[in-house]
Length: 454
Image (cartoon, rainbow, N blue to C red; front, side, top):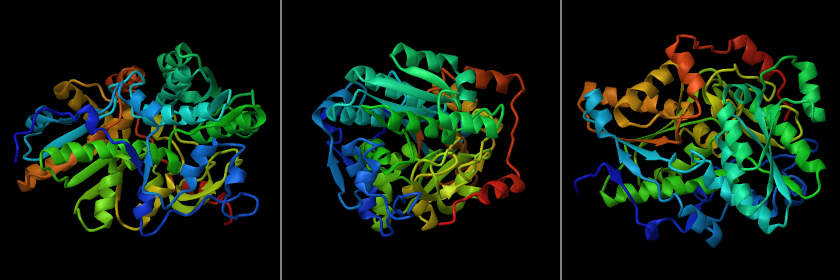
């Protein structure tokens, strides 16, 4: 085996020229989106008032394996891609493990996270369609930040509904969005009919991604020249994020490395789905034997405690029904610092793979997540985002198991972004003010009882 450098870089000409669609190689395809009124599979013309035309084609395509990356998007990617695959030598030494730990670092761009990979694509297709602007939701703010930057690049208007608790906890993330020209509204708000209904039903609520999605969709469908774009969950988003996994695969092959364990944080599924896509393809085909682990917050445990059922993608129940692991569209997560991992459901692609037994899921409490984040930061020199730190926590746990067994396994995890706008969370952790709220069975059952009868 070649000597492995601290950072494995691909050359610019080695960057993938096409996105990979994992659905083309899945034995069991993800269940289709359903019309909430008829319970029939959604047609392209039914989705057209909400989404951009080209994105609808990507969303509904289960058969095309590769989608060429348009030249303008590819040239934009060159500003920060290929991103490095880093060998965590210092963390390995700190843990005293024989395991080899690698992380794909996606925080090396202005938006600070992997979200820009899909944001620039969605803004491009909106521009090509001749739209005036787009609307969206954001949880921790990474998606809103990325989309506002992409819209600024293409001179599109950008309206962001930011989950209220994050709006209050992360004022600097909010100001970055405004710097790029986006309007940012705390959700739920009184500016939409759905927001007013949610506030009436849940006075004083700190909001959820499901609430913010409902508001963003209402504005998009009622404003001429606008469409709604989403930063996770949807098939099209996992398609764009496949560039993460394709680059990771190419970097590992440069040094003849086969991953034994792949770990990613899971909220809606964008980064995890992108990271694992080529490796899951090989696992399905029998060419790779590896464990794939989704890590979610114990406060919002869609995989580990959710139901695999059709559910609304939003709290206002205006979006299509998706079959996914869900806690119920009415579930309002605790106002913790899991940030972008506070969505009530999970990608239909990942839900199908999990139900097929092709991947695992672990839920972890947030104080343990921040302990892992701090441990990582002190030796690797990067302050990780709270979301990314869920993956760090489990990667460390797996490396310590290798210490017990003496196995030199290759562990790969996704470091989805930096946490420099998340210092309120770090402050609460350091001051001992952070708790580990976990929803009760009774709370979840009350939410499950409201699932649509499909």
